[in-house]
Structure formats: structure tokens, C-alpha cells
Image (tube, rainbow, N blue to C red; front, side, top):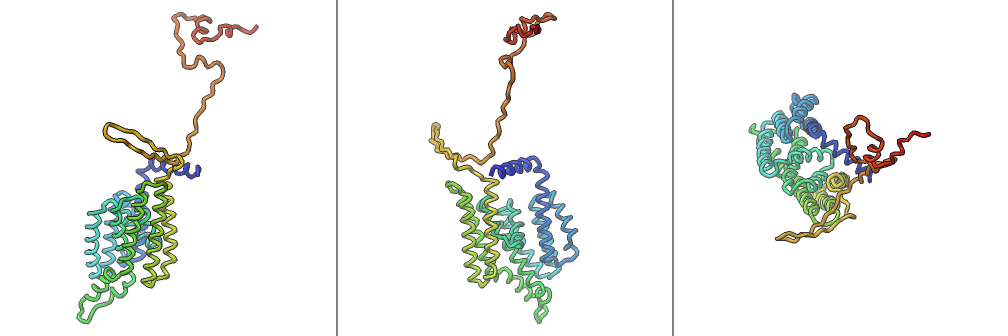
Amino acid sequence: MNKLLEIKDKAVKFCGEYEHFILPVVRFAVAFIAFITIDLNIGYMAKISSMLVALLLALVCALLPVNAILWIASIMILLDMYALSIEVFAITFVLFLVLYFVYFRFAPKDGMLVILTPICFQLHIPSVVPVAAGLLRRAYSVVAIICGTLLYYFLDGIRQNASALAEVVDKKGQSTTKLNVTMGQLLDNKEMFIVMAIFVITTLVVYQVRRLKINNSWTVATIAGGLVQLVALVVAYLVLGLPEKIIWLVLSTVAAIFAGVVIQFIFMNLDYARTENVQFEDDEYYYYVKAVPKKMIAKEEKVVKHFGNTGSLGKKIQRHNQENISKEAIAKDLEIDENIFEDDK
């Protein structure tokens, strides 16, 4: 444990010293993964669906705020939808307008959650997002999770029906069928609504439990969130007839609990064995304070050893006007025996 604490302290110190270099690297990595994910799943416009374009756009995002990744990713998605079908592009554009209005109204600082939610779905570990958000963010972060979940299911539905959306036209030559297919990805997707509801409940459970005044509240919150999410989604998948997703769900829950443990170790690693209860008062209130220290590596105390006569340490030797200072004056200033100046005979 001490070795882990030592590594954590060094990592925190390193991140604090080089924050201005680390944050752009993180933004670059997240943006690059997001753009590559878009290209691999819905890259219908060949001109922008390449590794080089994703790399260049990620470099631009590294120098901009997190929300810039959302804007650029949205433009890429809209261009891909336009290449697929003008009707799909129109519905996607309206959907993005609604999502951006909700996002910037309620959770403008949670852009990273909106980006990471679809990515975690692609990696089959979506359970990590609500648990991490409940531990690190506030209750309103559920808005960002809802936006990210809705975006993933909508785009995944478009991908699965891409061939139909590119070709289907009714007898009159109109595009009502394409509109129906596209809208069906939002309105008829029961799994999407159930998952969004469970993610909201999980986030709120984790958030409320970790704020309780109990020992190991973050650990309890992580386990509670993981179990709530696991049980609810297992029941939902069985009802929807999707038992094949339960295996991935179990692995995702394990990943969420592991992520919660890591987050707790970094941000809320407390030593409850040394808890202190303090009471004090002022003119108006009487205070009862529970102080829980953080687990830290004990700093080694430096011991300075002195050899010989240490009685004169710190004493200032007075300067004499005479060029030659007598043995008696030196011995008096240093408070030592003047006979030590005698040569050995």
C-alpha cells in the first residue's frame, strides 16, 4: 500500500507541475478516439473519414476547450449523415439542436461525459460512466449521460439501417419512408429509454450514497451503484429478449466497480482508523466536527548529528580590533578550555 501511495503522490505532483502540457495531451487522445470511432462506424463521407483527418482535427482540439470536441464531432456526424441521406441529415440536425440546448442549459461543463459515454458503449463498458459521474460530478451530470446515451443509440440505429436509409423511397418518389425509419431509431427504441433511465438512477444512487456521513461512503456508493445497475439491466434485457448482452453487462459492471475503486484511491483515500471528533464553539454556535485524515506516506525526519563540542553552535564570535587575537579571547568566546591551543610536547 505504501508503494501505491508513493506512486500516487508522485503522479499527483507530476500532474500539478506539468498540467499545462498534460491537459492538451488528454484532449488530443479523447478527440482522436472519438473521431476514429465516428469514422469506423458511420464514415459515409470518404473525404473526411480518414486517419489523417482525425489526427489533424485531434491536434486542433488539443489547443481548444473540451466543448470544441463536441462541435467538431457534431459537424463530422452531420456531414456523414448528409452523405447518407438528406432526410437523415435533417433529423440529425434537429436532434443535435435539441441536445445542445439541453446540454448547455443544464450541464455545460460535462462535455467530457457526453464524449466518453458513446466511446464506453463501443468498448462494451458503459456502466463505468454513471458510477464515475456519481463519484466525481454533481447530480445534474445525468443530463450529459442522457445526451451521450441517446446519441450512441441513435447513431448505432442509423448504422444498422444504413443500406435501407440510402435506398428506400416510396412509390410517389417522396422520402417519408426514410423519415419513418430514422425517427424509429429514437421513438421505437425501448432499450435506449430503459438504459437511460437506469443510468440516471445509478448516477443519483452513487451521488447520494457517497455524500452520506458514514465510513467508506465512496466504497459503499461504488458497490451500490454497480449492483443497482447490474440487477436492473439484467431484468431489462431478459424482458426485452436480449440475454446475449448479459455477459457484456457483467464485465461492464466489474469494470465500473474497479474504476470506482481507482477513483476513490486517487481522490478520497481516507484513513478511518485515525478519525478524530472535535468540538468547539463560538458566540453563536457549538460545533461537532468529524475529521478523517487522508492516507499519506510518513515523511522521514532528517536527523543532524554533531560531532565534538557542540556548545558553541549558533554563537556569534565577536570580532576584536586587534590584529592578533589572544588565545584567552578565543577560548572565552567559544566557551572552551584555552589549554587546547597548547602544542603537544
